[in-house]
Figure 1 (cartoon, rainbow, N blue to C red):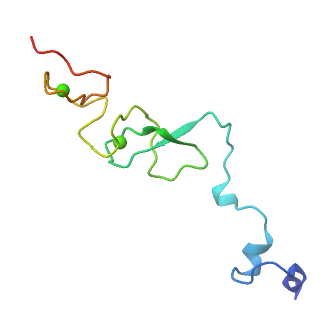
Figure 2: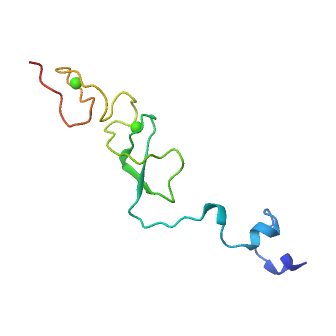
Figure 3: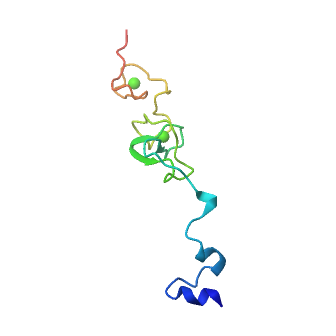
Length: 99
Ligand SMILES: [Ca+2]
Ligand SMILES: [Ca+2]
């Protein structure tokens, strides 16, 4: 009968969980400085422009940023960069000159 006192609360969730204001299973202390980055292509490097704090980020987000093209798994700071093809594969900002 106690849950009836909640009035406007959603009845979609059971009273036991709806009554508690926080979820201890997802408790997270967030300093706002510990960021995670979206890694859409799954190469382990995230998009520095798609950052979320540790507590807000989904599981798929990664610690490492530096991905200059998060749509291609073969473009990241650890990728080999062939010279002279005009494509910056290793995200260092330039294409190496062939010697
Ligand atoms: Ca990536
Ligand atoms: Ca290249």
